[in-house]
Every structure is written in C-alpha cells, then in structure tokens.
Length: 64
Image (cartoon, rainbow, N blue to C red; front, side, top):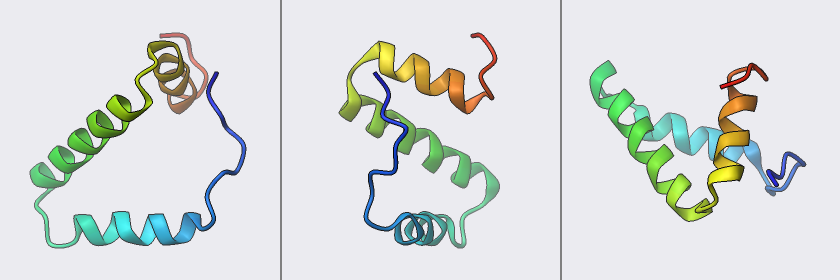
C-alpha cells in the first residue's frame, strides 16, 4: 500500500536539493536525471503494486 501521509521531516529541503540537482542541466539531461531518479527510487520501493498505485495517483487518479 502506498503511503501518502506526510512522512519526511522537510519536504522543502528535498525540493531544494532536487532543484539544485537540475541546475545548469540541459532539458535532455534534466529528463535523464529524472528518469534515473525514478528508477533508483522504484528499485528501492521494489513493490509493483505500490509503484502502480503511485503512477495512477501521479497521473491524477486516471486508470492506467
């Protein structure tokens, strides 16, 4: 089950780190960074049901 409750100490700190990671990258390199990050975090989660639910919610609750 996907945890959608607030769980991090500081979302702002992560958002700032994410923006900093993208700084000075081309659009192509920025997209590649996002893809690698998604794959790394997906591997960490490791549960297809959780990942599918996250994809559905990220799309705006539309069915996949």
